[in-house]
Length: 180
Image (cartoon, rainbow, N blue to C red):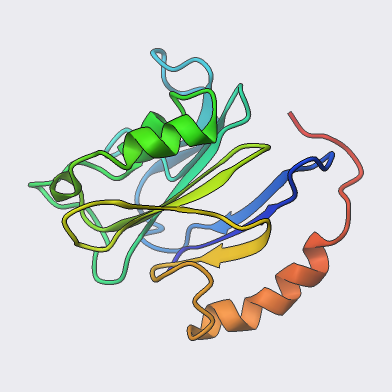
């Protein structure tokens, strides 16, 4: 199960730190982060070579987006759009608020269930599609949040409860330089 850790500190020199693993369907062909889309030159993200989308990326305005499968929805479905499109659509926006609001109005029936995280230096959001009639939009709190195939900060999951203390201790350190 893929896991994403996000540490938000608005106003800090490093306002958003994200760590993620991609340990599902690891044989699915992909390319490392890069500017892979001619129609989206401002986007840097990994490329899913099967569906053309991404699982994690950032744009030149500082918006980051990541998508994770929810329980029971691993892999593509021939009658649904790729969830990797959601990352690219989020990164079409210059701020996280605009991206999250726009994506919250998408037709949930067009996608298998997902968790989508969208953040910039000021705001962060969790878009939850758990199979209901609409995509839920929830703000991320400042500080540490973790998500996998369930709900945000679900400490009932062994992976999340085991990793949270480790992540909290590492993320309190300030990185020595700025990466662009």
